[in-house]
Image (cartoon, rainbow, N blue to C red; front, side, top):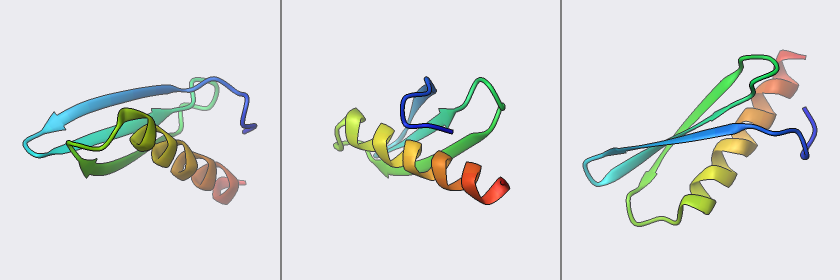
Length: 60
């Protein structure tokens, strides 16, 4: 998965936390992270993207 490949990012507020899920539409691979509700969405999306990239490399 390249850095320029589009992904979807979904945010769900869970009390004082936010669950950010990054989804690769080509492979269907998903990665989720939990962060503080006060964190900027861009930071949470970046962390979810890094986790998605890690899982894609690990999968091979």
